[in-house]
Image (cartoon, rainbow, N blue to C red):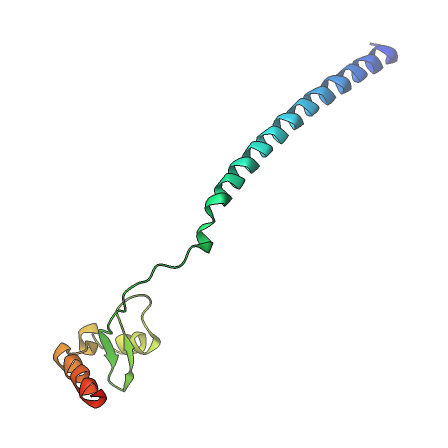
Length: 115
């Protein structure tokens, strides 16, 4: 092939590639517009962050720190540092359980003080 034929082939390829790129860009823009419409329709209901948080019942503590009785843990979530340290020192989780009868006695004593 001589230079003129190669140049003509180059121009044809450039034109064809330009048309393909334009068509693909148009298709992507349509898809993006469609996705934006769907997203906006979802915004009408309100994103989950705007909803009020669900109210959970208060959970009574189940475990306490004998060294510092004000430190208590409900048994939910991550274990507190004092409990992790005590367990790694050889303690058992059962050793830190709050006696239910003592807990109810504390409740009764608080009721007597407020009456």
